[in-house]
Amino acid sequence: MNKDNILENINKLIGEYCESEHQFNEFDEKNPVVRLHEPSFGGEEIFAATAQMLSTFVTMGKEVKKFEAQYAKSYGHKYALFNNSGSSANLLAISALTNYMAKDKLNAGDEIIVPALSWSTTVWPLIQHNLVPVFVDCDPQTYNFDLNKLEEAITPNTRAIMLVHVYGNPCDMDGLMAIAAKHNLQIIEDSCESMGAFYKGKAVGTFGRVATFSTYFSHHITTLEGGICVTDEFELVEIMRMLRAHGWSRETDEHQKYVAQYPDIDPRFIFINLGYNLRPTEVQAVMGQIQLRKLSDFVKSRRETAAYYLRELEKYSEFFDYQQETQGAESSWFGFGLTLKNNCPFSVAEITAHMKSKNIETRPIIAGNMARHPVMQHYPHKVSGSLENCDNIMQNSFAVGCHHAIGQKAREYVVASFDEFMSKQNLQKSA
Image (cartoon, rainbow, N blue to C red; front, side, top):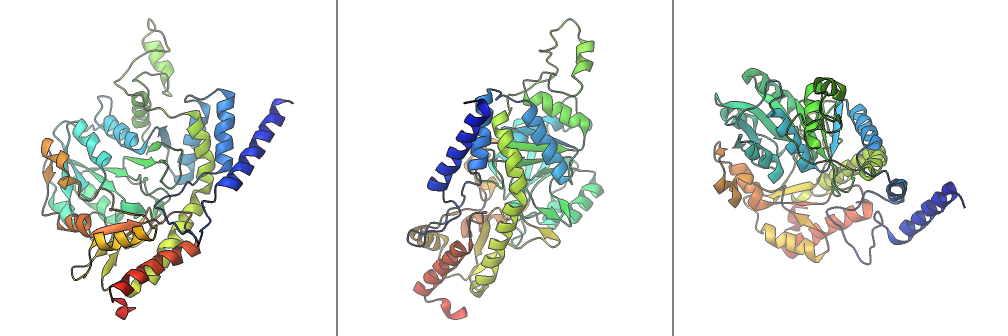
């Protein structure tokens, strides 16, 4: 049997196994479960990964470059840089912006405005590079920056805004870009939760100097672990190429320039910069190429689920605020967030315990208010204003799943579980 026949048989067997064992998109009414996330990959990706492994070409190479080119072209970026996680993408972005080779670089002590409602590795690279995060409150409806409070946080030391499109909901980019232009600030987009989202027809990640995405297992597409940096600046992507792999020049487009400049050093190992090892694999890249083709359908499904929840749970708006899409935006709905109103006669703990009893998974909104986590007591940072909205979300909000695998039966089950809880609380009068 030749190689092609063997691969064909492997592909067939993988397909049969997945069809038998994996029913991610099927809702079992006898044993209902609605998780926060389900795998978005199946037999096609598993076979592609297996075939790449069998080729023995597994470390970063031509498939990574192919995936980078596909991603950049799909969403209007000049350059994309694949790496090993969304957190690493943030690290690479900040490392590049503070690097000695960067134009208009950020310097130690510079203040960077960040949303208090964010994730740890939005903030950690700033601290790791001796920048000062300045936490700003959110708008309680969109979960994104309150732009009035953001502008109040600007000082002569402010150099950049590192935004987060929270739960896939694009920020008000008209307002943000106007503030940035007025105060001569750089924009860094943490888009790790918002792949496939658009603001007024323009993809998130295309507004700032550099942006980041995640391809972790639970995100819009997956390469199991993975992240992507995007930029329109050639010099910046070249720095990130060095930083991603040890600080050497051999992954850069201008490698030959350094070979000519340093003829006495082995051209394979010319170290131009500091660096890490944040490289992805060819196996991840071939998965990403397949997943990227499916992204628009995944986002469409998420948007349908969010629209259903907003419509069907409107009857409980006396008790809940639901995350609202930014005007002019198309959210990719990383999750579906709810906030208990002040007059709510039950607690987050009570309703999430009920959901757990119904096998519906819930979680907090991102990490809640990052400024309130104990680690922040040990590192320099600033807090602008009271952060009262972020505090409220941290204490009184939760999210349910809104992923591609939630079909109509699962949506109905989630709403019916809300109905059951409200009935037990004798609160269905507004339904």
